[in-house]
Image 1: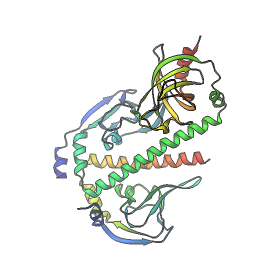
Image 2 (image 1 turned 30 degrees about the horizontal axis):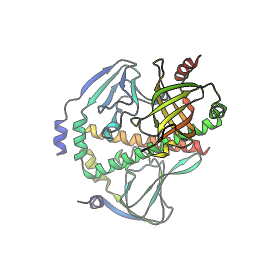
Image 3 (image 1 turned 45 degrees about the vertical axis):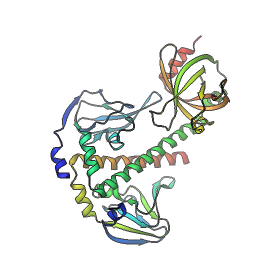
Image 4 (image 1 turned 90 degrees about the vertical axis):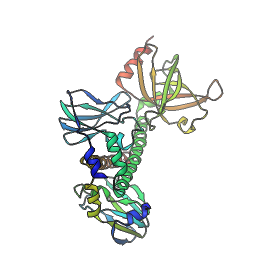
Length: 134
Length: 258
């Protein structure tokens, strides 16, 4: 099965967003993730010096997965904005979590550590950028 | 399949460390993963002879997961030292690696995406950190003196190794230090077959050498001057120190005494 078919099999429903709409808001709670079906999004982090773009994602890319893996315990670490009109698929949280729960406790711990590391690194990057900008 | 893997995971082994013991050494190639059962562990990065505490971890947290996700192609990016007496669980990396390969594709996809994002972010942090160090150096008065390198220069012929500071630690190029002063060094390098990018003015290089008195020193220096070397295919780099630890400064100072 192609990767695309695989992810699309997990889509619960589709959503359309207009240019510049905030699809995910940094600091809020939520345990669902998205896959981009069409279009582009910008992942931005709020810093004391304003918004910092940390990534641009395209068709087939997933976002919001950090909160999904931690079942919503981890607040959204960044905001995601539509960059032009975007069509996204919302992943079926229950199905993904069921797959996740089938892993050994050790593997789940490792994945959560990966989430923490990614969160810390993104924070550190935002910090550095605002230092350099200052 | 997954249930089977769960079943065959061996019982974990427990390890005890005394306060101050080194658990993981930065630069080593290791694949063990540890979970802290009791006590606290400090994650430390050594750079230019300085130790920077990156994190203090407690019970339930894991150590060494990066080498696992990186398939241990990179050496350990930081050291781990027991901050109190600690008890650790050592995990079986080979079995976990097998589970990783066989896990549900959607989870593997998410994990792979997070990993590539993390590596990208870390690479960017490395680059920006260097830029920040550079702009700080430019602002400090010592640097303007250093650029001129007007200090007494001792002529030497020392083997050394160097790498661009944002390259992984295992990347090492051989060079030859031809003179040393308290402000910088003159270094001869091979320009053939290497990306010219790293021999540009303003590039920061991490240099390691052993002084004739058998003291090893390492420091970060900036390329402030580039000339053709005496032999074809060689470059002579005038370098000004940007980051030298107190310890390295002492060793250099001692060596520079007439």
